[in-house]
Image (tube, rainbow, N blue to C red; front, side):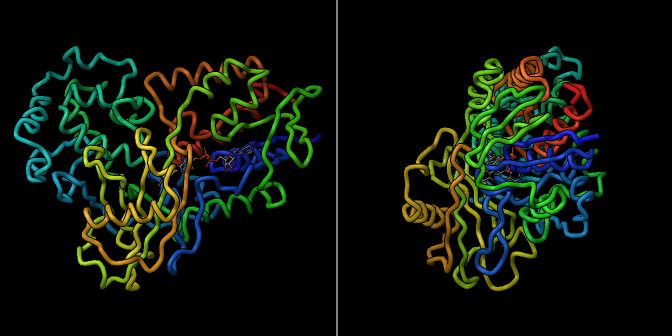
Length: 463
Ligand SMILES: Cc1cc2nc3c(=O)[nH]c(=O)nc-3n(C[C@H](O)[C@H](O)[C@H](O)COP(=O)(O)OP(=O)(O)OC[C@H]3O[C@@H](n4cnc5c(N)ncnc54)[C@H](O)[C@@H]3O)c2cc1C
């Protein structure tokens, strides 16, 4: 029997996970990527270590990434952050985030009061949340809404603006007043449904989480690029084609053909794991309803500036994993990861390494600056934030234009309708990737494997 031929468009982590799943199921797999396989998982040498250009770790307590690492024999190469606590910029000072936060929502009111982050009114709003009876009608508010709508209503504006929004913006470079609760903060959505008091519900969430022996974050010691390397080896390096964009998708006999500048690829099944705009273009003619949903998804552009300093040139103790900068600060920098403090394997050698994030959905300045201008602006912000005036010994900029999807309320319902329309219009073609159900590495892995599994289980079509 001839193997089912699966063409995966997009060799980011979602596409590679789809290809790996299809390979395990005995399919004949080809991955087409417009650029470098790995997408946002790229690790390159910087100031003497392997440094990630974008994603630098994954959540270990949600399904997806740890299992994949285990299958690929990477489990022994994983490491967790050396330091757990982080700082947030507030009123001109870098303050430590209090213990007991769940996606920025406090559960420990004493720690919150000691953090100095909230006013007396702000603290009262959090305490008032605990006065709601568990079955107050507030609990029945189950439609998708924005994270901001829920958090502001339950625990007040200050918690939202000073904790939740900076934290979530640090993840998706967006505005949590416009972020889908169900897709962008599923933990909060689940807690909100169980108890009208968000603080009380999240205390239960946190108790369950802290009972776990698994660290919150993990990463391969040589960077997230190692995951890509092992995936490509396991799928077969000759099956993963970089610099090979898919330019068109059409029906051909009982299957499909995917055009590339190097010639067409025949397929029985196709996984579309490229960014939404690419999927929208490929599907516009044959699956317009799906294409419309994909075309409607907005992305934020960000850049990461990596900077290295001699340890003697940095006077402040960088005893945290990093610093979050809320939009109210009006700075270009949105977050600064203290890479050499956060990861034991990236420090301890007399070099301070920082990964500085810039750019938000509502701040596109970084896209208009040259690399030199961007580095100058970042250095000016670092004087304000950390008092670092020295010149870095190494510096580089990585641009991630249109890289972070902005899920608006109702996103998951739109994705479901897009998938149903695609299954009806083009059976044997499925979507995967950050455009669907979350942008984190685990969610992308799950989306890729689910898409391949569904296509090969025959749910959508048989060869
Ligand atoms: C700066 C930054 C930091 C991040 N940090 C973290 C983190 O620490 N932890 C975490 O879990 N997540 C993080 N993320 C999010 C996460 O990295 C991404 O959401 C995830 O890697 C996306 O995977 P993907 O496969 O869906 O898409 P991508 O990685 O975007 O891959 C899509 C691929 O499609 C290819 N492509 C484009 N057009 C075509 C075409 N026409 N034909 C074929 N291929 C095409 C691209 O070249 C690309 O390789 C970060 C993201 C960014 C931008």
